[in-house]
Image 1: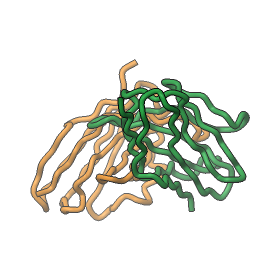
Image 2: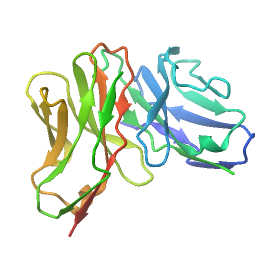
Image 3: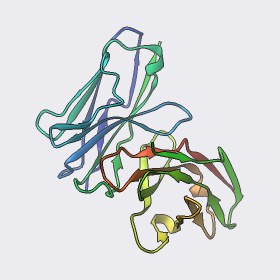
Image 4: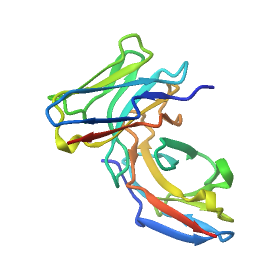
Length: 115
Length: 114
C-alpha cells in the first residue's frame, strides 16, 4: 500500500511569511495527525482529525497555525505568520480509527527553516 | 498527565551484541505503549506495541520489548544488533481511554559499531 505522502520535503522562508504543508494519508485511514518535531525532541501533536472533524487541537498555536481536512482525506497545515521558533520538521501521520491502540503511520515530513 | 522518559541520549553497542534501549512511562490509567524508529530524513516507523496480555511483545526486524507494570517500564531489546539498526528510537505512550494524545519520549540514538 502507498504510504503517507507529504509535500514539500523542504521549505525555507523568512520570519513573518506564511507557509503551507500538504498531507495525503494512507487510503482508508480515518484518523490524521500533524506533529511538530523540533531538533533533539520527540514529535509533539499539533492537531488530530477524525474524518473531517477535529478531535484534539489543544496544542495548536491557534493565533498562527491552522489546519483543515475538508473532505476527510488530505489535509493542509498552515503557519501565518511564521516565527523563528517554528523551525522544525512537520510530520503527518495516519491511522485506522478505533480505540487508540492502532499504530500511526508517518510520512517523511517537511523540514521548515525560518530565516 | 502522561509522560515518557528515555534516560539515555545515546546507546553504543558492538555488532552482534545484545542491545537494550530504556523507556519508563507515566499514565493515569493503563497504558498503550509503542516503539518507533526514525532513520535520517525519514518519518517514524512503527516497530511494536503493547496493548494488553503477554508482557513480552515481539515486533519488526527482530526487536522485542518487555512491559513491566511494577517498574512502569517498556524497554526495547534485540538479541543481536546489526549496523543497520543504527537510528533514533522513540518510545510513546497513551492511556487506554483513547481520549489522550500519544506522547513521545525525546528519543535515544542507537549506534551499532562493526
